[in-house]
Amino acid sequence: MVPLRGINLAGAEFGHEKPGFSCATPGVYGKDWTYPGESTVAYFARHGLRLFRLPFRWERLQPALGCDFDPAEQRRLARFLDLARSYECRVILDLHNYGRYALPTSGTTREFIVDELSGDRAPVTSADFADLWQRLATVFKDHRALHGYGLMNEPHDMGASDWKAMSQTAVDAIRAVDLGTAIYVSGLEWSKSYRWSEANGPSAWIRDPSGNVVYEAHCYFDEDGSGRYQVSFQDELRRDPRLLDRGVARLEDFAQWCARNGVRGFLGEYGVPRDEPRWHEALTRFLARIDELGMESACWAAGEWWGDYPLSVQPGHAFVSDSPLLPRLKRRPQPR
Image 1: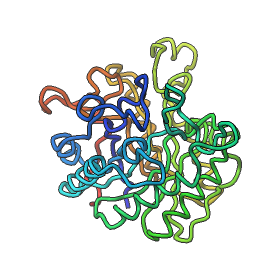
Image 2 (image 1 turned 45 degrees about the horizontal axis):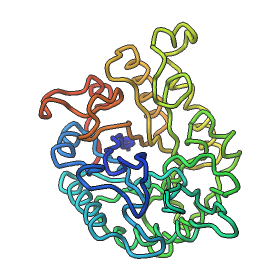
Image 3 (image 1 turned 90 degrees about the vertical axis):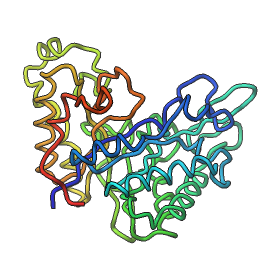
Image 4 (image 1 turned 135 degrees about the vertical axis):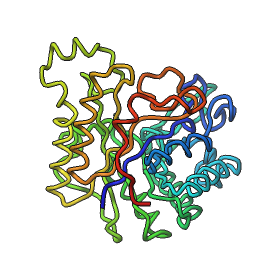
């Protein structure tokens, strides 16, 4: 079976970087964050990119830890899943929180790492993280568009907190209510594919009674792997004559780690500037290698609010102007 290829549909995670953002002050829907609309879903479905990774923020869905979801945000998630289903697409729910949760504290706000101590207690705990995922699984486990649970986007700089134990706790909580759905587990240090073994050690760590865990890596081709592409292509090429194969090379550590451990891998983010055609060949070679490995993948990124963001693959001019990256991402129709 041809592995699914898709798109990150961003918007529901927007606004978290604004000063004062927290669970108590999440912003205003429609001004600070949004969910992808039908035109976007229909467009990518029509072009055969039917796997959507949907970033969203924990603070907006569950503004009080260990408590019920915000009804309006839960409805927005549900509406997006319904929309995806209507176009025969699949959705990975991506908790886009980097191992953190923002709380009001002492007249300001602060992002606390899960299990980070503040004084003699942790304001946000692994139990809170597991509670979120058990509630999400309880609500959405039977939805026909659901493809998987993305536990946490790019956990990094976790200090004394144990991401491996934390992610196992969340898997256990999900499996208590849902034995079927795939669970996507990101790696430490921004999930970088070429640092995977260094950041995560030699062995896979999740024990899953269902055997349906997928490890998620991200891969950008610029010098520091950040996806910001701050150095021109020409300067990058001058420093690295093998630049067009850099993406392929950066896949190998993750690919070999998955093979040694007998586990499945997923490329949850990758992308290149749309207006620099010389990067596009690097993307084509990268995608060919992903297909050889049999890995699912989701390009970063689309969504109605990107504007002139260099990596955006969102169509322009009322959905009649394709991104120049689209022909590189498309292929023969995928299984539905």
